Structure formats: C-alpha cells, structure tokens
Length: 345
Ligand code: CP3
Image 1 (cartoon, protein in one colour):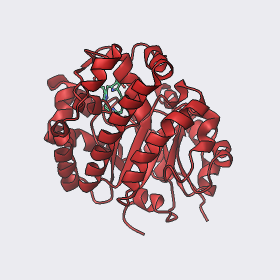
Image 2: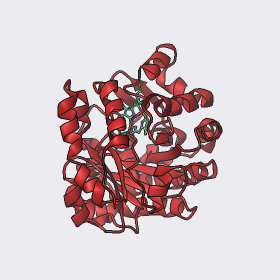
Image 3: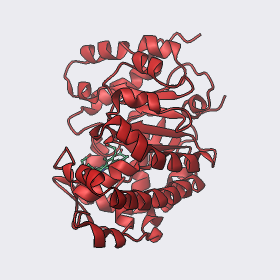
C-alpha cells in the first residue's frame, strides 16, 4: 500500500474507498481559476508552464481531489501539426479546417517544439504537488481530434463535415488519423518521461459513428497509442464517451480502465465489459447544478452498493464539469466520497 489511494487502486490494491477526481476539474467551476482567467487568456494559462502548473493544482487544494490532471487541451495536437487554433466565446475555432482536403492534409507537419511547454509544466507540477496526489497526463483520441480538425469548431455538434469525410474520402481520413496518431504517441510517451502517473485518452465523440465503424476504423489507432503508453508501465484510462453497448469491445487489451458516461448504470456496464478492466465514472455532472444537497446526496448513495463490491473503480463524473455546476456541490461530492461508509470487506 502506498500513500496514494489513486495509484493503489490503479495497481489493483484494495483500498477503503474509491479515489475521486473530475474531468474539467480545474478550468470551469473554481473561483480561484476564474480569478486567474480575469488576468490571463485560456491560451496564456495553458502555454505558460508556471501558470499551467498552478491551475493544475488548484482543484487539489480547493476541492481535495485525489488526482490532478494536466491543465492543457486536446487541441494542441492539431496546433502542433500546423493548424491555427483560437479559443473564442463559441469554443475552439480553426482558421483552415481540413475541408479542402488534399493540399491541406499534406500541409500537416509535426512541430514537436510546440509541445515543449507541456513538458515544462509537468516538471513543475511534479515538483510542487503533494506526494499523495496522482498526476494524470492526457491527449485527445484520434477520432475526436479528427472531428475538430475537419469541422473546425464545436458549434456543429453533429460534426457532419468530419463524418462525411470519413465515409467519402476514407484514404484521406486515414492519412489524417495516421498523423494524429504518430504525434500523439510521441506526445504521450514524452509525458510519461516527465513523471505522469496515469494517462487518459479522451474520445469524447465516440458516440457519433456506428460502433462497427468505430471498432474497425478507429480502434486500431487508439490501440497504438495506448500500447505505446502502457509499454512505459503507465496505466491508461480510455474514455469513449457515448459508445453505449460498444463498451463490450473495450477490453483490457486496449486499456487498464474505461471511463463511462452516465448512459448505463455501472452495475450494467460491469456485466457488459471485460472483468479485468477497471471502471471510472459515471455521476451525471448536471446533478451538480441543483440547489438541494439532500437530492445530491440521494443520487450519490446510489453508488454505495457498486462501490462496496467493486474495488477497481474510480469515482468521476460521466463527462466534464460545466460552469453551471456549483463549486459547493462539487466539494460536497468529494467530501461525501471520502467519508461514506463503503463497507468494503
Ligand atoms: O480541468 C481541466 O479543464 C483540465 C484540462 C482540459 C481542458 N480541456 C481545458 C479547457 C482537458 C482535459 C480538456 C480536454 C478537452 N478539450 C476535450 C476532451 C474532454 C471533453 O470535455 O470532452 C475536448 C473535446 C476539448 C476541446 C475543447 N476545449 C472545447 C470543445 C472547448 C470549449 C468548451 C469547453 O469545454 O469549455 C475547450 C476549451 C477549454 N479547454 C477550456 C478549458 C479550461 C475553457 C477555456 C476558458 O476558460 O475559456
């Protein structure tokens, strides 16, 4: 047993409670973050190693979570492939999305120096974080990254241009996915050299295409990234949001843990997927926007039975926190997870 409940759980060591952290725990709800945002743009926070490290650790101090996730964004991979990225009121925007296919694909050239600031941030986080806090590195999974690169924004939630390209020009789509995958492997394995304890791959848009298409055309790229990271003895959490019953394809060959959204109960998911896989999730983050903490507590109590029987489980939300979640509720959840009677034998 170590002093980190998060790392022990990932290593299969039975602990008295599940570890707890949240996707988007730093950059959405914390007053301390919003204060920093008054002075700095999001890009400035992310690209200045000292500031990115500071923001990464805010939720550890302010919420008491068991893990810190690197403060960055999945879209720095397209940026390092030469695409021009802006974060606006309407979310991320690329100047030249990959719609005019041919010439633009050949213009994607990796410039690893654009990722250096992340490694510097990791070194500072590693130096400053409490010993018991696990450090999570991450990148976007190839399909989600592809969706943004082709669509160019997140306003069209159906990502219809990206999906059309996948079907209409499979060879071009493959070329783009290859370029994303190669740079992601370099990026992820370099993060492991800078001391991350665990790596999460975010496939936020897995649910946009049929499972068979996902499994046949996308999963091989996912496997290449996760295999490269696991070769460094770093455990991997794969989050295929919206994959539904397709979770049965996400086995221990692909990742150590699967992140689960709120669609299914964890008890059902447990019967649907590889018993060797750990699970992470899947509290509905929208419940964190309600006013009544008694209702919140009742929803949390629904996890007690699962958590008493399953030790390979990390408590998290089924997707990221959003600005309308109250920080008091988020803190309430952390304290609840830490103090609940988990009755683990
Ligand atoms: O706590 C954290 O926020 C951790 C760092 C982090 C960010 N983005 C910072 C961010 C992480 C892990 C991400 C991942 C990410 N980024 C994903 C995958 C996870 C998911 O939420 O589905 C995706 C799809 C993106 C792309 C992206 N970045 C979008 C669509 C947006 C706009 C909408 C939104 O979520 O806010 C961003 C902006 C972004 N990324 C912000 C932050 C803190 C908001 C920037 C601000 O303060 O204005």
